[in-house]
Image (cartoon, rainbow, N blue to C red; front, side, top):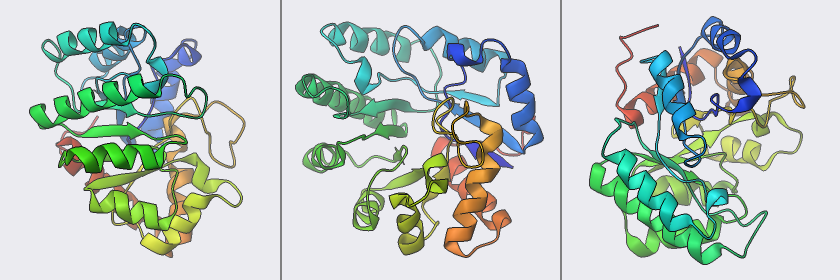
Length: 259
């Protein structure tokens, strides 16, 4: 079985055929799907999906860095309230994103640190977003010595940075980008191996080759696994076993309960 460690299946892009998407995921061997949170606008949709597919859809709680605006303290207050009322498998997706907007950097750091503290207090894994911000994310993690576990979602760095993330106790989230021509993350796989890797789609975004340019979905995880296997010189079944074991250990999943 496969685990998709990062999918936004609750977003409107799937409103017309969500049930079919789930059926295709199951047919492809994807038995667990982690649902990272974005903000208060999407939170209930994520929980509704998790309630509809208990045991398969695994909700997280967090505030995405791109959702950090002037009212970010209200977002954190709402997050804190939800943490007291809903069972979740982790914190995220949270972090720093300097790709689109650098004006909220300070607020992003504050929100990121708040969520890291919450993860540590609750002993939950954290899913980190680090687009155009890997040095800044490392600085936060190393400055605070959080001693956390989690995933660097859509890992954007080179092999040395991958080793740095692993040394901090994190797994590397590998998605559709690994199938793209000249992808930096392909070099990471070749140089660091797959022992600390998990698979993800980031659906509906970043569909892998040969589906690039279309809406991404969890049933495409085998395409990602096949490319990782090719890069690592391993059998696809090995990649399935390693990445599933890593994800199950991180999120404390009982894989004996199949859907």
